[in-house]
Amino acid sequence: MASSADAMGAVPSGAVSPGTTLPEDRIQRHAGVDRLFHWLTAASVITLMATALLPILGVRFDWTPIHWVTGLVLTALVVFHLLRSMAWRKLRSIWFSAGELRGTNVGKYSVAQKLMHHAMTLMVLSAVVTGLLMLKKIKTPLMTRDPYVFGFDTWGVIYVIHGLAALAAVTLVIIHVYFALIPENRMYLRAMIRGWITRQDQRARLAENAWLDKKTP
Amino acid sequence: MEIFRVGHDAWGRQVLEGVSWDLLPLAAGVGLLVIVGHAIYRLIRRKPGE
Image (tube, rainbow over all chains, first blue to last red; front, top):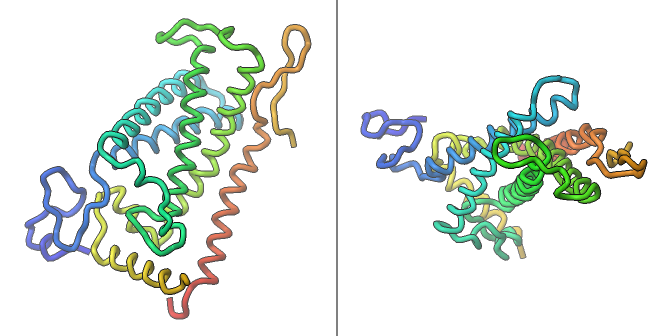
């Protein structure tokens, strides 16, 4: 719903861009750079899953170049996110507080959202680290191919971890997309697209938190 | 259902090749199970008139 400020044309509706003042009834939740990071990561993960899993399901194409190049894009995104998180944010804020675990305190992210973040982190880091090692097995312009850098057993473990990450990606992407699309979470989806949530959404969240507070001894 | 893919090296010894792709439907199934579980939870938790 457009605010009165929108209706007057004082503030353009839609995405939050640098230097844009939000209408009074909106709160910025995600900066543009974070939204760009999220959607580029999503596109990379979907491309990696498609190029890895479609050949297994019988769709034949030259998937290797697309897969490793996208893998490097994902690696760059992960490095960017890690540096940004460590330099500009408090790493502690992504962990669970005692109040959150008791259900008496809700910060920017809920316990469920943090759990999803940590599961995705574990999956992506496992895939990226093992994927980078696996580059030694294929011909790329980046490095000399050397499949003998590790023994059979070590390669086996690397492939198992990479495969487990791929299987975890299937489960996590299904769950993530479902929770992004359900009506009660629509505000978070909008925030990840446009950057803001309404104060009304924020109040509703706090009211729910107050309800949880009463239920907790 | 196999959990791992196993091959043989030049000397005929068994070597680990990765996880079995038979687990792919299981991975998707776990995701779908969470969706069904949450949908049931939403139905039960729904207040009258919602």
